[in-house]
Image (cartoon, rainbow, N blue to C red; front, side):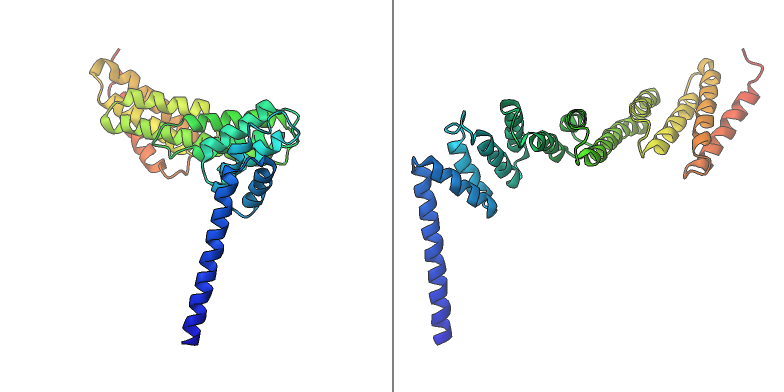
Length: 271
């Protein structure tokens, strides 16, 4: 019984402390003591109470505008939203800090975090990639602006990752054209990916799909266009096998070569 009574007392005490803390926070929200709000916001942020901290910084942001603490308030406001995983609002406030306070000590971090918040909003390849494009642009701008930053290597890695995502989206779109039998559209989409992102990790897959689409386009063409298109398929074979002679698709590429070559040999006398 004593043990149960002690546990109950501790629970009641904890609830009382929590309610007291909540009550103090509610009073602080209604207070006009902006310095106290600012200091409490910093403390709450350090404790990981990002929602409460963000609310306080929202309240004092305009009050501190034009003061020596203005950029610091904006910095904590942005970081609080980042802590909440609200990357859209965090990015907005980091960008606002950068634009409004170009002499701030937080400027480099704000510029990087603006770009990083775009990165955190970049969706899976199947979806719209606006934030992926924004990430690449913002990271490139950061690298130009801060060539000696310790973040440069991370920027490069993110740019490569985002570029691969764009290529993957292009590949998904092209594969859809391929699956539907729209081989000309598939070839065009795949070529554009390779031109724009020649170092992509999907290069072998893209080149093979161009080869196979070229072959199937020839195979399904009207007779008057077949010879020219089989020749184009052979050209794609030489490009593919030149780069990936031992690739995972090399055997199928050889079959395409043999079939295309046979057609051209059998129709050698046609004009």
